[in-house]
Image: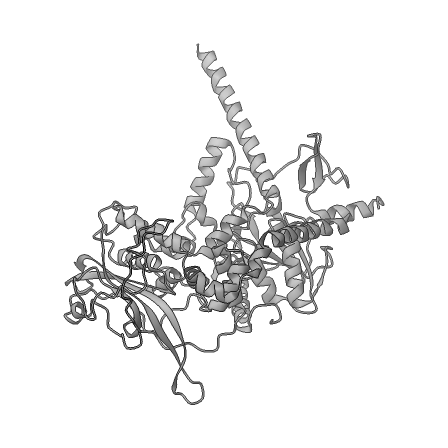
Length: 276
Length: 361
């Protein structure tokens, strides 16, 4: 089998698409998208990006819903390792490539790191316009009025947008972009991020990117605050963190416990506090 | 803790795969040849949807997935990705097919006659055997049976509307087009589409959402030669044969791009023997390019390029549908929080309104 599974032509094409995506922040680039031994919808877009950019010097981290140990993360990490033999890590700081499904790590990312997002629905306009041809036209004209109307309608009925994750963002003040189904909590971390952020949608055959230090702002009205998930003052039951995204976990007695969703962050916090 | 986080998922996967292997192990005992000869239609379906013509690999894939044919097609597609493309074959003309079956419902008699070939169309579907009636079995070889489509006389008389054709066919596996979609790309999507999906969309046209009742102008199953131009000698070389199904269906008349009134047709083609799929495909092709006649309202799925281009692929639709099994607890929690705050907002609003009303009274 070839290094990194894909044939060289496929890798070249994906790299070209990535370069184009980086050159036009937030713009959606089409690519051929090869079938992988992992099912469509299970991270094949992110996987193709990772396989196209990875080499022996990389250190790979894979998370799914914030967790390195999630079945899908384990599966993807094992597959990439089996076809590249790169070192893997769970340490956010140490990783050069972090492939993620629906979370941005709590720890601030640094220059030289690449965050690869798995994307189910690449075009944010799908919420208001499912026709791909029309979507393209709306992007070309920077016509996001339908998104604004949606936001207005939601706000008037429910006091805020009904969108809970994959919240629309404006990239480089030009393109409205789907940040993948990350919680609103993570949306603000995309802005001015030091790391390169790449987005891959395998089934929909699209790639897009946010280069380091790019302006990324959630779509919102000037007189409304952008509210993110809050945990009513709860802190992590393991590390005590009060500023991380928390999972609500029901124990066998039906009691709710709150733990950090980012397991690596939680471990590090505990280590620092000398709990280990 | 961290160590366990990884090990937890790892062990769970290993155990799960172990149970699965217990469940499906018996299928590994089936001989590949038995499968290829015995379940020939399954093999054909998997090759067609998997977009790779190899009976041997299709048999292995079916065994691997213990008869889950969509999963088997997925195995073939994944394998296909790892194969380097050596060259592109010469365009196939289905008129040159060595026919093992060929019928036309548009004409009573056709050149070469109605060749039923191997078919169970006229079998009475009973699980018990009816009394055996002895027939004198005819000998037949498809070797010299090459006849053009039954629509050829009409086409020669310039009675048939020409459908769009690109000089260079598009290749959806190397470059997926954006709208407006070239017809060669649309046909490729359908030819490797999921049989059931094509059937469903094709069927909608028959119930009023399209041309209602096309006629099968030509349905053929047979062998086709695959030839390539040799990279060094530049001669045409035959590299193999494939079995395929091709269908031309005829719709009502319509105006072509020059304003001339012509008969409309649609084309269907797939690997192996799969008449239902090829007929469905030809009907969708017919509907896509002749939607102006349709009287079934605006909601004609079979005439909607976006619907056809993005919803017929079995590997994609099955992958996405199954991805809902992945953990979604972060996503769900964000949904739940928004739901709670929206609920509170409308309750508060209701309360205020109620108080205002009471104040008015």
